[in-house]
Length: 111
Length: 115
Image (tube, rainbow over all chains, first blue to last red; front, side, top):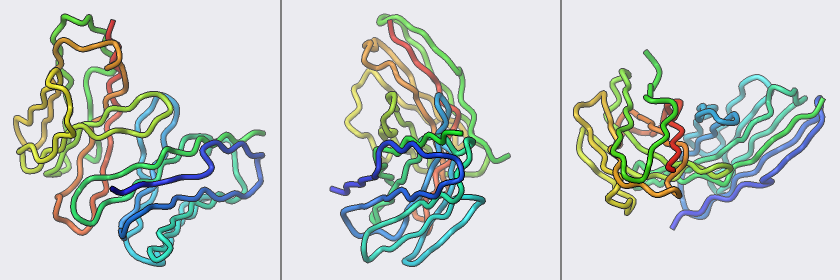
């Protein structure tokens, strides 16, 4: 059974600082997704990572995938308050369409 | 059109009521999903439809009954729910189950409260 672990689960950081969220998964997969969820809202797709070494960047967020280590990272550069949200990674099992989500990282960026 | 729509946004129902949640997408996606999400938890997969056929049922109680009338529409019929079924119900869609990736696009959700 595929397991996906995110850490940290809670992250409080100051504006302007950098930080990284980690997503580890337990079985072979080369398809990983990052989503953002604001309180009471739906999930917004941030990044699609489809191969070993994939790196995607959008604004202050950069995501990468290391399939050999079964690890993805979401790096936040010079955080701003607008980035406060819960971030989920989700891994697609190679055998089908199911996404297995991590527990989510609740990020709070303080002024 | 690049969005998934869901109605209603909010629903309050008693344990003896019958209600339905609706989901619609016009992106030509052939896979559609229902998820349940409790507060501060990740979404839990309930059902998957592929080409309008049910392909995954995650052992969901029969008081939840999905229906896919056509490739753009997905319904979730609710009957005799329990208070613990109160949650955010999310619909999602994606291109094809056999495509090289399966990015899922989520609707805004229906906030369900069962009294």
